[in-house]
Amino acid sequence: MQTRPILQIIEPQTAIEGAGVRLLRSIAPRQSNEYDPFLLFDHFAFNDPIEGPLRGFPYHPHRGIETVTYMLEGSTSHRDSLGNAGLIGPGDVQWMSSGRGILHEEMPRRGESGNIYGFQLWVNLPSHLKMSEPRYQEVLASTIPTYEKDGVTIRVVTGIVDNVTGPVVDIAASPLYLDVRLAPASEWNFPIPSGHTALAYVFEGRGKFSGEAVDSVCMAVFGDGDQLEVRTEADGVRFMLIAGAPFNEPIVPYGPFVMNTVEEIQQTLAELRNGTFIQP
Image 1 (cartoon, one colour):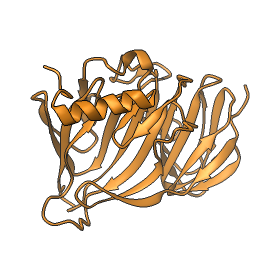
Image 2 (cartoon, helix red, strand yellow):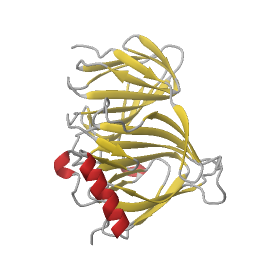
Image 3 (spheres, rainbow, N blue to C red):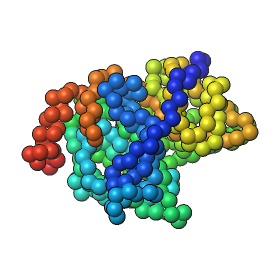
Image 4 (cartoon, rainbow, N blue to C red):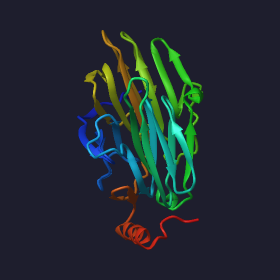
């Protein structure tokens, strides 16, 4: 087995989105597409709004991507142009495939602590699915299975850990999305297919990844290989492990849209202007 080396450590940068939502952003959509099939990763907090009373992400469009919301604390209510509505609570996941187009909003509700924290991941769609029908997979915390062994605890959102399979299925990138905890003095070796993109967002504690110490809060980008090696010493560590097969297609990102050509972006903007963006 070849252990994946760390190629890059990304220090997340503060950004303000929506109606004053403070984000720690590690990656964002770029034409270079170096984290294919993953486009964006935000660590968000709805705790310090700067733009009046509306706190969250008011109605906005998406096309050509999948958005994944994973709540740690508090909750987020959502509704969309297709008539869907619901509440994403602590530990819940919403995996939305925007396909050909959707308008939606995500608005926060504070938990008992008074805070709201979570992550949003954007996953690309391949060219043949960019104009597919929008759909949701909403997963309650109680239905996300947990793997536990030798000081390692993993919530499996999508993918497989040993014989534990995550509830999110039928995603084009066949991704792995895991919430991983290692207790102090633990070790975890995990196979990831060669050629797949692999990222780890470390948000609590400290661990050694491929022998290199990584402190929270940062994103580790791994080179190629067929296994991930993580160890802890005096401190434990918690991280989101993100991996998947790249599509190897050109992309053109424009705000909340990610398509394959400039012409497709122009068509999207024209549809927004003439009122045909949302299809019945």
